[in-house]
Image (tube, rainbow, N blue to C red; front, side, top):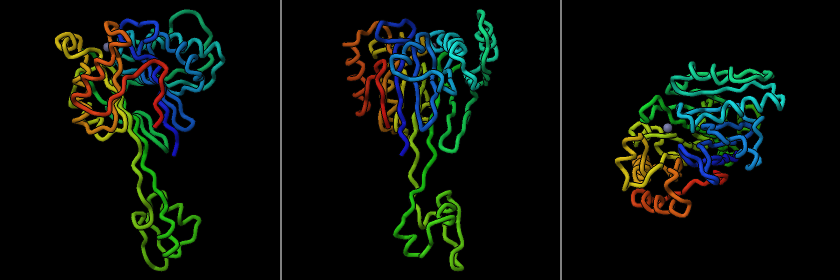
Length: 301
Ligand SMILES: [Zn+2]
């Protein structure tokens, strides 16, 4: 199975702290590398995490609040200095056609590669042979989306069954593995008879949002839900006013979506590191398997 590695580059919110940067998440799967959000300071965090910015092919921005995208101009210009030639693809919600041209026009620098940008409308944005990345709408009082990484299902060959039927290893196995029927000794053999379908892994990131139905739907049975938990529940009114979630609300969403694990992120500066346990305890009232995201920590699935 391919390693799926998630690195939290920044787990703060509007105001960064020395050890809690603006939001950004790096994902690595097989030879692919991409970012979810790119807050200010993302470049330094990539260095600290020993991740190469040049290998990043896509950046997905959840919304156009500065803390989620102001790392982009610097990242794009540094990649020019490093002589990048491969194009970079940026997705973001409505507003991207207004903001990306400005980002690309800032300052003096020589362009060595193309930056393509596209609006992240709900649905699949990027599809490879092995996975898709799609967007879903969230509720943040401004155009905002969350993102879903969905690995495609794989088929494991049931060798005993194949041997029993006398089907020789080779092109026919390949057809079955791709999910196609074959004809063998005058009979039709379906992939379900001789292979086992293993569902792909799913990771969901909400960006900033109030708890919402769209997240429950998008995160159904996900392996990992990374959810906004800016506030504790005693300041629920503040969370509502600013279109964020409390840790307890994030826990409820995780339970209702039936996810395997919940990661809380996007913490307000009002909570010191040692106080984040309070948010963890709060989410645990709703859902068992909760983790607090911390800068430069990794999750490997
Ligand atoms: Zn925001």
